[in-house]
Image 1 (spheres, rainbow, N blue to C red):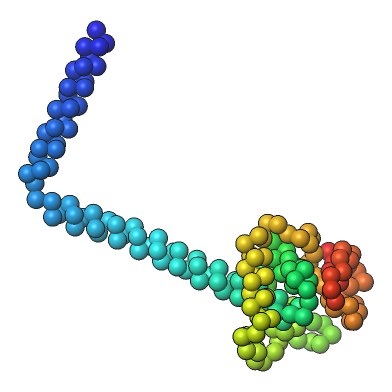
Image 2: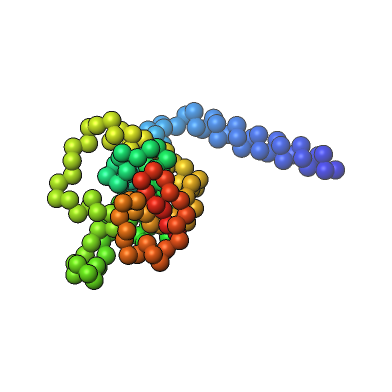
Length: 188
């Protein structure tokens, strides 16, 4: 009984397909082609635009990270430069700081002593950035790309602050040091 029903269903579906295929062969398909091209463009343009904007944002973020590495630790070892990148990325991950790299790097906060807004990283207060065509810049850029790609593999878990060994900022007394890498002391 059920084999007979299955056979009838198969015959019916085959007949539908055969009729569709036969009529499809006879029809003018210009409108279908135009509709398909329009639908493809309608879907492809926003997707490509989104990908392009996303790519540009990623490149901007990597450049901001590289600038911070370059200005803060260009004379340091690769480990020291990677540590500076880790602090920057830790701040991005923290709720106490902005949620993207460029905003973290260029953030300014009020300084009661100087009675003005001060950059979190001192180099951001320079009037003119230097030319970036040196080997040190390319190295910082490569470290930034690597750190950006491997954000989840943070080498300095929890490090949010650092300073050069030769200075003694007042805020450092209240922080817990977690590493000394090159000429920088890193704090939680």
